[in-house]
Image (tube, rainbow, N blue to C red):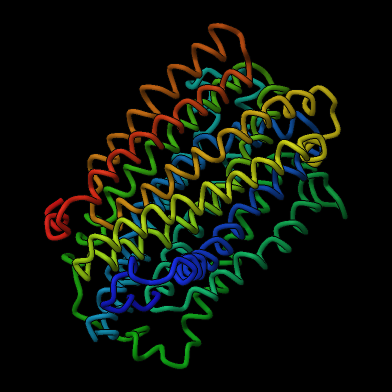
Length: 459
């Protein structure tokens, strides 16, 4: 973890210094998360270049897959908290035991999720998909099941490393894994060099194999650290059931918060799947662009969370307010530029994903909405990070739940399916929900940042 800020208020520093510190905290997280989302991007592009049908099948498979994955990752967030606390308290030998229990949680949950995904075709049929869409998406979900335990265990291990200030290894492995994934995609999607031609299921299988490679590489790094004994790696400990329960209690709120948003997006994706393969393919291409840009916002969200938490630790109300609003300003500027890029390059961006004119035309319409969504989506992500740093979780989570389940999902159904506005209608609903979330969370943070900092510990 990054060293805490000094006792001096962040608000007393020059603006330039605060901007530099926030960006320095954000960049490693951005790179690591971009490495992971690039796996999905490579899959989406290569399946889309293979056929629009394959892209549609891959897209609908991501609905339940990403939802379960995000819920699992949220449940593991306690790892970085407990490891960071142990290391900061001068008990680094406890970190390895915390990691092993987190790894066990990840393995068990990943195995449960894998079993769930094995019933992917039935799940998609229950979600209103056609038989052909459910069959293609279900095959991809079966392939994703193979790698689910590996990815959650990889995340658990990367959280351990981030907790002891070793984030670079996970970042490099995540970025390098894309070369492995791309090569396996070439073999399995189109059936090159005698391998079976699997389409979307091949892309998902390539990703699953890559996830096991990533896990092996990261655990290999942990076991080869020169100071592994200092952190209790491979050393017996007396941490038991209580530590496991602490990890689960810490992770549960994050799991719920992230699951609310991911579940809403997954539900809206099923609406696109009910419209047809062309609509699903275009929706997946556009959502991949949203997800790619969102990883940049996640980096700023994490940096903002750390700086707000530092301010709370210093009992620094002015520093808390400055850190939160600065994070918001930076993400708005970044996402405004990203939106301009999407608008100006919407035709070549759509062409990256598919050669089929019907999908490209629809994706270009969706990308207009994507450009508008990015600023509000980034804003709500950073504001959630600011609230987490201040230990203010319950009310912001409720605001997100309202925005995505009371606004986004019903409005997407109304506009996209009932009023037959199609994919643009779905993105209009997402735009409305992210705007509502950003406004509500801004208001909440305005109130929070005026309170005495000591009161925040009770939230």
